Image (cartoon, rainbow, N blue to C red; front, side, top):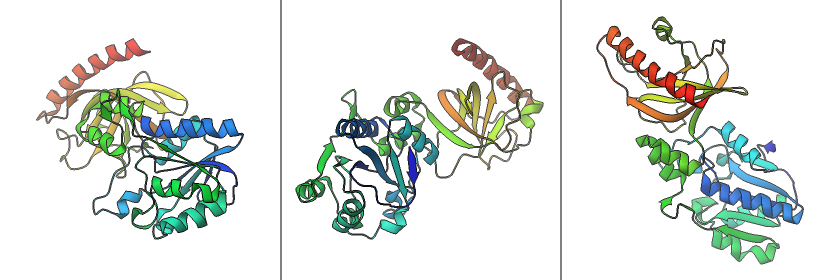
Length: 306
């Protein structure tokens, strides 16, 4: 998949419009249909999206992302998309919907297909709608395909907004069902205070990106992906109230049977199961006793899955 950060001339494409935060099951419905339609016509497929969330320009409260942009690229590529356009929304936010359609989409891409979700909007003040795309499809000789709302097992809403609520409340099973994969966080490993190492459980430490939706504090079972390697991990997320002033957040992952130097490397921490909430144990001995219990349960879990 080729990635572009500016518009270029790339004619006769099948294109899909949307932010695709999380690339959840609803998004995958759009994208797999786009790729299928493109292949059936012998043309290339493209996603036209942004490198910042358009919603943040219409609300005072910043909307966190469900995944990193890198993970969005990886998933879109795995679904067979040929081109990804990640544009700066600041450049396009004041363009009227019809001007965006005519001067950006039609002029540069001459698309044979434009595909959107049922609730997609575009252009200044969100005046562009699926209905508008359908209205001008004959004039510009493209097929407009609007994918209807998707629901999990015909019941639960599949949307980025709903998934963020699930993340906030730590509903890992529901998150996995709606995303089609485990929730994860990607960042570079930083040097910590090495207290966990003195307790017998060395960890890879990460800062949880401010741009990412956050799970509740607690201890989790999961995985860490380092390059091509995937290792079971005992994960702690919170402020370490027993050991610190409880003000600085840190994400720590103890990798099972792993003893490599990964400082500075970008890793992905994957959350599979929550074990307990974060607690203040009052003293280091009580904390160590709890960590031994956590690790014992984790070791049994890890041995079952490897």
